[in-house]
Length: 184
Image (cartoon, rainbow, N blue to C red; front, top):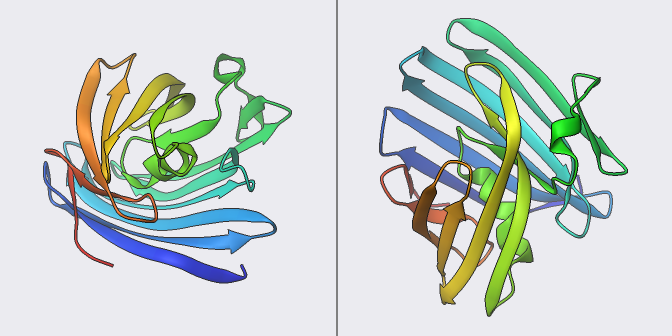
């Protein structure tokens, strides 16, 4: 790591919980390092995550480790020539995905936000990780910058749509009903 670009943290609005995250330069690309702690229907979770991207903000690899629902979580995602694997097991359903989306944190919205033009729309396909499971499926997402730091967001497979507020680095600062930025 050659230097921190930004840090942020969030407070969960739909449950007890928080998330802290740091963005840094790494080997000509970027690395997102975070720590999510929350309680949901499965009990307390303590998940640490790392996402590595190239200079184009496209996901190259990601890791999630910790505890969830009373069990250990240890997942490693790799992408080679567009082919995804989870813990060395090929995931052909994820072919064409550019991003990873961890359902338990707003941090992974950062990569598409960094590619979003100042005016316009970005369509992307993400490897969507949900727990318990793990369940990993494709998620088609749309980001449209409406004005300044306000972005219209839709996730096709889940039918979810909202408006996200972001900071100058691309981190979500307000995710209605789910997360609120708690300052850097």
